[in-house]
Length: 362
Image (cartoon, rainbow, N blue to C red):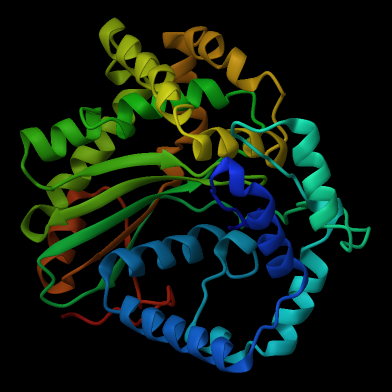
């Protein structure tokens, strides 16, 4: 992943030791055969080439480029050229640097004896050398915010327009985390969220739209969007703006909405903790994300403490409509003029890599 990685397995409790030995061998003694590396690189190149024709992939890549720029880690987009340039020596060097015990969080969940698990782990990883420190995640500043702009990427004759609109958001350690979660659940996370209810259920413009915050160690983005039928691109943009503005006070959150949003978040926990893999992921996340050890014990009370005023406050603070980056991938010949007539924002034309293109009349 962007800020953590894992190697894991699920086994019968009775087979834990041999499974652990296999994993240790994979981690400590990887061969990285060149033919396998070339095969994997080939697969990635094919996937990246194919993605150039997929509006959703284009929208995601252009969104990251516009919001963060190519110099920020969150704005980097993998290309075929990047993949082709990777050598076996690069892979070996990364493995040597990354897979160190000082970076590791080891989580075991199951019907096992802790002392026996520790002994089995120490035996399997006896040759794991010491060293390694947790990364600092000292991210550079994001590019200066710009006035609200529509960035249009032409996808001729596309049946749908893909929206990706947003801006840099807060890091995971923000004290506003719980209020943001409740606010976004109501606005764009639930199937019956404000955005999806209006644009899908009432208007019939889309099979599904939504919003979310990609929390991380750095400024993970707020992003709203989805695929919209081409002929309704302009109307859907007006609806998006109205609903996001409504969350900032023009459309007060109702008691029923707040209750449903909170219950949805709290009631999602039992399903996660009903599987050993889910429990392991939750425990590991506490340590990789730097959360309090009683995070899950406190979760429900923290969510329930969020007020209606909190929801409006965080909507205003983290969804600045005057600075919104609006990326739309669609049939320019059909949607450009209707979008311009909305008066929502000026239009800048970009190619599929997020680079400016001349403004030529289609």
